[in-house]
Length: 339
Image (cartoon, rainbow, N blue to C red; front, top):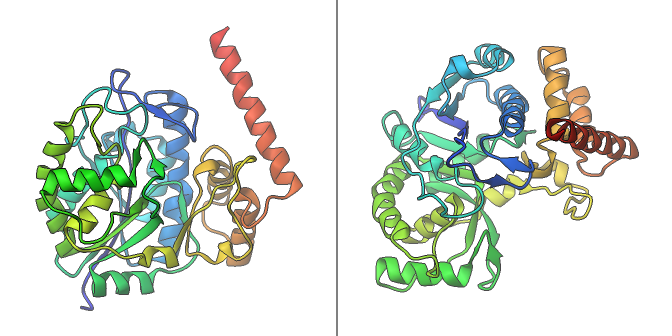
């Protein structure tokens, strides 16, 4: 359908002090001003790169914050890039103490419900984490979503692998308890950094979510519970029969930690770079660079900078020194606050 729409979205939910949970990659709780600042800055490279590659897509930023509560630099960039800001409450919130980390992640399912009001059956919805940047057009991905109904990022198959407090073996047990039947295939883990659905599949997810959610939050702590949004996505993918690994052609979770780096030469060819460790580092440098330029510079220059700032496919000595300075500065600021 020539008039179908490709929606591309990300989000930020600011937690209150009462509900704040821990976010390991930024080293703070969800109510801290540091976490808030980091997540505001990474919106700039996200939306700048996705808009550059997709001039006709409908870009959306979901948050419990209103536009007036966003930093002026972000509002100005959103206006320039034609990003729609949608203020949305968090109704899929887990009970207090549900898990120690990432308690804002189920906000994705509020986004799904909101999108059902506007999406048509053959439109596509791509929800990505904000610590992603887009290096290539995703036209082929959108075609695949329309053809298959979804595109998922398959990350784990081993039944005994512990993923955010739950193993795949436990997720299979959850499936049996919830649906009173065996999964047709063992449940795999699909990463929540890329959720790509055709419009009709968005509606099916919304129809299936309430019963699963009610069952999940009724479980006791020693029972196999779903702790984050990708656990839920993995169960629904089996239940609704939209499993695949199409997303693996387009995205990679690129860990660039000093003690764990899974990036190899050629990873720069992925259309979407997911950069969890670079929230405070490479993506912050990119934010400052884009704001200085006031636009995306010429292609070769921009992606040369992105590669350098984020260490893809390899960290230079200068990049390592920049990161060290960032780490030292952050610790010093923390000491000043405590004194």
